Amino acid sequence: MMCGCSAPRLTHGSRAPIIGISAGGTGQSRVGQDYIDAVCAAGGVPVIIPILTDSLALAAILDRVDGVVMTGGEDIDPAFYGEAALPQMGEINAPRDTFDLMLARLSARGGKPLLGICRGVQAINVAFGGSLWQDIPSQIPESPIQHRSKNDEDPFHDVYIVEGSRLAALTISGATRINTYHHQAVKEVARGFVVSATAPDSVVEGIECFENGYRIIGVQFHPEKMFESGDFRYQPLFEWLVKESRK
Image (cartoon, rainbow, N blue to C red; front, side):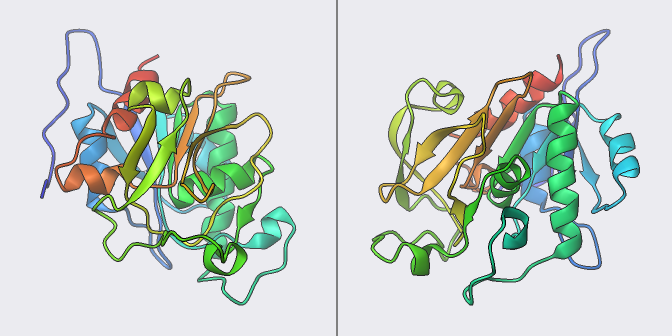
């Protein structure tokens, strides 16, 4: 297991980009060490963006960071995409919902490159007008895939990465295996976004948007946990974020 990270290498006259990592938690703001390590190993300086519902305070923080990672966590309140909650809905963190949706919009509109992971990709999709499957097992009962792995570090089900997508350019196009730990997923894709990866049951595993100055990649799986376990196949996602954050 990886732990900690060394300081990013700098060249004369340059600085490592500052990468804001969205916090989770209830009554506190916290971030998993695996996100921090992956950002640092990619050459970025990781900082935690605390849960805020004050848009001015959040905008002030975003003025000081160069790129953003949106992390995993709880279910998103379906009221944000015009649906009533199903009985199978999990825990909702109302302040974090407000925070994440603001963070996605402010980051993208401010020209910051944005990487969404698990809940992060769901929040991005909802922030820009998309919707979610609230509970895959009950809403897609014919699916043979268990999307909520007991071990979210190990790749355990197939995914197809769409040829020609930015995700494919960074990783590999075609069939591969990934790790997931979720029961919600992107349903209706937000306008301007395209699907970059799907599971064999057609559940969306990745979306991206490179229109209107946006630089957004979102994945349903956990590249940071694979990195922490020594599997570096998706570390190029963090390297992409750091590279884009230098611009």
